[in-house]
Amino acid sequence: MTGQAAGDKVLVVHPAFSGERVGLDFAIGVQRLVARRLKACGRPAVFALARTRDDDGELVAAAIESWPEDAVTAMAVEQFECRWVVVPEFAAVDDGCRLTTGLFEVDARRRLRALEAWSFEGANVGLPEHLVALVDGIARRTETNTPWADATGLFGTPDPIPALYYLRALGFCSQLEDGCRVDPRQVLATLCVALEAAPAMAPLVELVPEIVHAFARSGANDIELAQWIRELRQRSGADAWPDLMDQARAARAGVD
Image 1 (cartoon, rainbow, N blue to C red):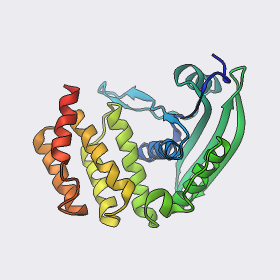
Image 2 (cartoon, one colour):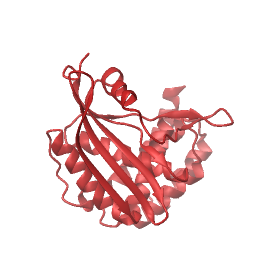
Image 3 (cartoon, rainbow, N blue to C red):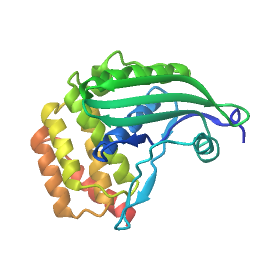
Image 4 (cartoon, helix red, strand yellow):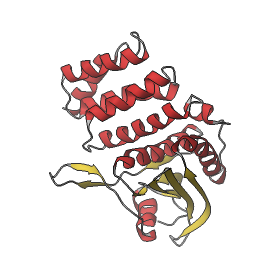
């Protein structure tokens, strides 16, 4: 298969990452946000999560410092049949974070051709606005358009704090869905903080069932699920997600 024969999809690879591992959840959330918002604009997009095993033999998200070009090309062309590739590089720095993102196209010779790059470095609260420009730029270069003019449009809130917690929750969601070990207490705490700050934030409200379903599929029992749902409803309203327990049970049964 050649790059020209590949489908007009975008692959967002697992973020290259350096720094304290706690920031990796956040970086994976950025990766998934880009893929999700591109799909919402009508541009098919997929994302790849790289996994490894920890000292206890359990699956965890891999901390990869850099991607060789050959590996990225092989993923794009052979595994996912994509025409474009987004390569994010994320680093936790003392005063915030650094995100460098490259967009590439796979040519007929299976080589990556650089199209554009974006960069951000600064306090974390500035990242949501950067992501507006990033998603818009990638959409434009992959022949589609975005409807979001600012962070409110992209995240459903003008407040950067719940937007940042939403990104981390997205990262947790990706890992749960791919069978990686995560700390359920951290996932629940992340969702609760975000919901307390922005209980009506639409993308966050929509994400909660996805995470609870993934938590159920990972083996959570009814008591654990009920505790999670009770905590989440305390932050977002007693009537939120009325059928969530039944849905979570169904999700768990589907795996069994």
